[in-house]
Length: 488
Image 1 (cartoon, one colour):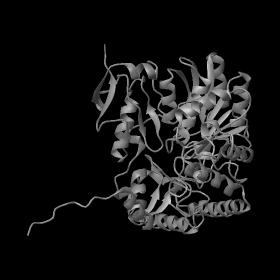
Image 2 (cartoon, one colour):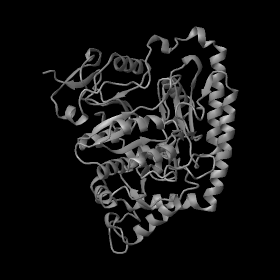
Image 3 (cartoon, rainbow, N blue to C red):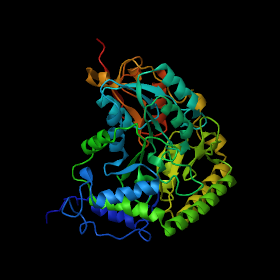
Image 4 (cartoon, helix red, strand yellow):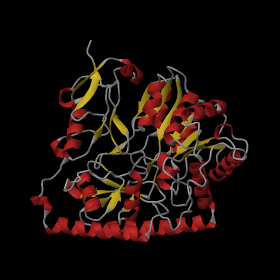
């Protein structure tokens, strides 16, 4: 009898259902945390439509969608709010394009998401970088100094807009109020990538939204920290500096011409929930549990919770919803801690970096998840002491390779010029002194530490080696190779 060697195919939907039934707890986005007890139960096929009569058109909203976005703008205290169904990315691209023309100068935070660099390259813009302050202990980007921004605007007089990231991926918020006042003195717009701060303003213990501080354009990913579908986001605009007709035009260009009504309904439900009494009570409970959880971290001997000091390193305020923690003396790398929590305890965290991990929380988190995290960390902390890992484990110490963070590269040419140049692929260890055609970044969070047009330094090569040794995957490379400009 002939054996049937056919391998059974596994489909995405089947895998998703299996994962849903597993005991893995999500300390990652999306912010709805698959908490189906609190979320509306919809049949997606039953409500999946297109721009039929009575349901408006996102790109020329005059009816139900316009009314929906007006309610959100009122709730978020914005001049206008726009649905984004292609994520915050399309809002970033549209915001840049609406304020800048080909060849313009733009002041951007060097720790911006890769979408910002794509916008810069596509429009042939000249970036002037403002570097954030940093916490060297964990290699964490902090806030921007307002006086440095004023210095840049005084030096480069042709800058057409300022684009900053606040909060950072790790939850650090810059002094947006002061920065907004400075930028407006120069009569140019400030755009804030508030992707990780859609929940700001939902509770008094969270930071204030950049919208309330007067930023001209604010984009936020509602799916990251609020109960909404992946890929959903909002763009808020206010004031008279931004040409709103231009903004609408570019939103139509960078968004799909067939926006999902399911996603838009999801954003609407999310904002309605947050504004309701039920939502407000849920945020009160969430914040109480979050404070208890953060207090429990103080019991650990080896596991350290990152808690930046306000007023230091450009940190104006901090998002307590982000749990950023690592192991003392680097006895475990971030990747090792991440893997341990995922494989042994079925706790799926958001990301691992060299020296820390991030567990994202939201109003949809359950007490059971917090308890599982603390129990797992208690066991790991006891083991670190019991086996005396200080002496018996290979330590990952920063002393082996000293790297000033953030890495500040020499810019040789503009990103769009590097994109157009001839390229070749070389081993990254042999790339010293070459000009990059590659974006190199860890994902998440997608913040490039090397951008096309920048010179590859020993620090970049050392950082890549350090990340690879720690088990982290560098995006933008083909195994051990990266693309550089051909020397001519």
